[in-house]
Image (tube, rainbow, N blue to C red; front, side, top):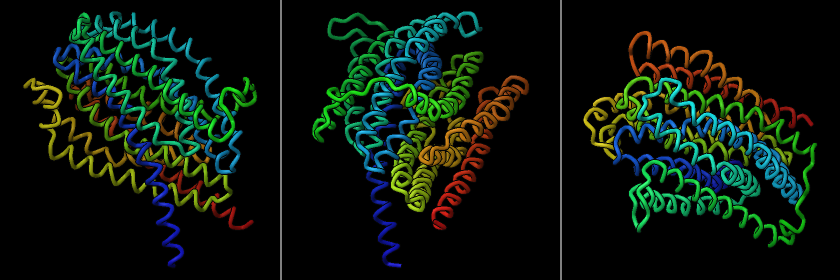
Length: 453
């Protein structure tokens, strides 16, 4: 019994040490968008809505590209669990090649979409600003994907603190760039929302350079200089990476696309509804980043254990991560319930937004625990090499059930933005239940099979 408790404590300590920097990195990721929205907030609801729509359209295809690289979680972590460091290095090279391959079509798609706002009934003043914002933001696609691939490699080999430090510096760069370029400080012209997009692109270039530089330094210290032994493109490895990453990318596309479609739908309502939706979604996104980081840590910990041939430890790691992520989301839900007004006032003092906003945060409070469960379960399953089930669960939960209900409640029953959020809450309940059961079944089956060997 004492030995078992010591083992749990040691593994929990290792999980926390891995999870905290990853969680901070995920919070740094969403902080970029939050900083952009806060900095343009003084320009009014139209500017807030324009940035929201531009980001919504950008992140759907961009996150699909990032999702294709999520197979590195499984492949690098399991190779590291086997202590095959050269294999980890080779997977990083393939991730860089994949990022370069998918960037051009993503950029072409984004530029095309940037000219479509005016033709889909979006509020004209919002549509005009969103198009220019998106075209500038598109130039940050390649550095964003290079950052994403290098980050997955560094997480897989346990080098996570540098990721947090990179995001801290990137957010400082982004805040300063916003201040200078949005409002025309230090002799620069006042560019409004376009200045925010330029600042974000500059920050992403800095992120990619910083992580690639650290990866080079890490490899050099272990006597394997990154570029001296850089692997060439290997078609079989690229196929393996895509085979794992494509379902993960599909899952992200389905999930983020559902929420971004809700933002697009809010653009058919009023500027106040769109701004309120954006603020509430930003807070839900902030809380979501914690279980997302814990889920990434779960993918790495589970992958390490599977690579080391210890499925029982992998199962323990997954359940510990679920407890951590869900516990945090309970606390987040309580904050949303008790302090909606002060949270909204951090963005705006517009009385119309303040009247609508608290009810949306109360709905967000209701789905926090389910959002935590589905996010961490997705990461734990990815550590096992299972990426298809989360994609299917997101398709059924969001696109077959939640979104149709949300649109009916919003536009047919005239519940407005509240109806949309109620439908999305149902989606999260369905997805969380499905993935939790799948994790329990797959991890138990793997542990049982290993115990019989």
